[in-house]
Length: 542
Image (cartoon, rainbow, N blue to C red; front, side, top):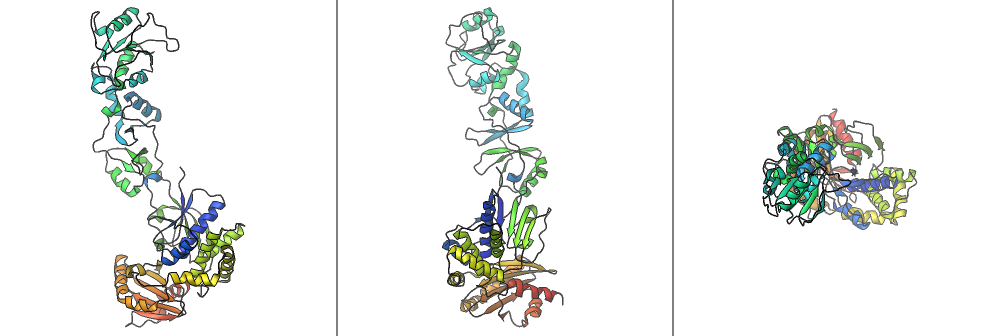
């Protein structure tokens, strides 16, 4: 099955990040891309949830990493062999598929164990013990299968062999067998009659022309009669291979992997194991195939499309091990490396969904009402209903077009949308500092900038002590040089900037923060991209 292409925005996603992933996924599907799905890298915030609920669109799939897994390896499948199947059937599968090891399954397709070439080899020495089939509870059906034979008469009294195996050469004329025993004889009429008179429950006739079976004597018996084209001596050699594989499988200290195991985990186990081949199981515990150490260098990287970001530190864990197909963004071009050329569309507009709306337009695709509504929500959120300095004429033009398709009063809906995400009441400080948070490498410094839009400044000051405590934990946990939180109020018209970090001098130089203060109000500041990051970059050059 072809794997999905995942489309996602940055970690700690905002409305643009979620809605652009959904909208671009829809456009790609309309244009013919299959196996593509929208995803998200974090919790949906209250503002974004309002938009999703308003337009009745489910949140995208949450993914936590994009690291290669066992399911990304080009493992090989093998025909299923079950515990009741014969050793010969297992041997045939292994030789036909050129496999040194195969997994053996229970009837419910779950893993029972494994067998290797060396495990089977010891059964190929022929019939050395008359009771070998009985000891191993061999299914009667395995006899015909192994001997390429045909049951031409009668029935065996039990599903499994419950007697010993004889040949006409090993019994006398007056020997009496029981109805569970088997006897092997050639095509000589005398020997066939001896077998019939023995009382055995199954007679195996060798050296027969299977396309035109003509027996030298008539059969008047209720016992099972099997004909095979194999010679007398080959039959003796082959019959022991009818024992079920469950008797020779290895199921102690069995090493196997699951399809969602990461390659890092698999490598460590493989390199410390004496085995070369390993079964792989899916999430339901069913066997999917076999991998070997050579598969570690044959990986199908996960394919992704990035929207609303292009910085490694803002993306998912394992992004450097994925195949990036496209990037759609409205931020600076930063530090994500690609091994092959990609489609890159980056424009200096206020919102990624503005770019995507223009792509719908250029492809002459009219988005459905709910997709238009989500793109509109993203533009209104990112531009703060066109009040942000990042807002461009393109944002306003696309927003008005989308509002018509979505049947939305632009200003009324915008106020409801931003209002849904502005209350700080009841939000833990740890969640506030992670809301729409992005990491940047500015010069040699690692900087985190989170932004919360609110109309509830009073709640901010009651939470300030707890917020700073969480910011200190974040600084230590991620080894940050500077940690900032923008609390933006479009009613008051500005941003309260909270600052901690060993390199807080950057904020002092960039924004005039006093050494004795831990925050500063910045009037008419709304944009992290245009009004915070550029000033910090300038400060690093002082």
